[in-house]
Image (cartoon, rainbow, N blue to C red):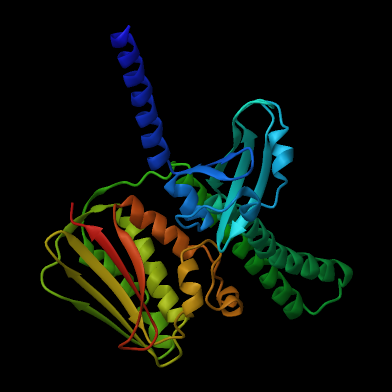
Length: 347
């Protein structure tokens, strides 16, 4: 009999240790309160989420919910609410863990839904941005087309001007749709990269030569510097050139006439690096965390005028990550503008 009792107690202690370990390490918060609302138990996650100290307050001091109404619930019923602690959004579930008239109390389960909320906000903002970006050129196309229909006696040169505007806006919408399709392929893993070894410096040099005339027209000083021997890298050359072209084109776009744009290529034992640094308008400190988001623009009006879709940096990040690399932004302390660095592994 004594052996059976000892074995039973050992099993109970073992189960208790399992539960304690589970509560200790789980990412969701768990709180338990007695029938009088006094605290019984909490795990570390709950204390962090609610900003509680070692001394746990009573139920009504934490939650704006009648304690008795939770006690009167019958399983599987539960109460649900949301609360915000600073910048953290929490989803809480309340349920009794005993029937009325028995010992027990209320159990509270807490989920951190901050990332879900952020994702929802980004989705809403993305839909709003897409709608806005397409509405503007559509409005222009409609207005100029209606003018051409309603005014058949317009001078030929004016009609041609209106048609050019329509074509330009149609091209702009086409670029937006194409960029959105590109991002969609990356999101769903359908954008296959043709990885092969290629000379990285040659890819940078191709872009440098391609944009040379654009920089010259604006009297900008465009330079290319190579440090040491640059090895080949494994990646999709056309996509990598697309990234470099986008970064250099942005530098030209947002650097005043007569400004300076410096391209640099170097390598270490594991990676190859490319940077583009300018003395342009730079990026406001508060906008840096959102820099690689879709439809982000430093200067919205100027970007639209130059035909930008606001999707270029998002596409760049996807391409670089597919090549197992990274892309980052730093303030250009030397030139006073912006500096982007792309890192790609050698193999």
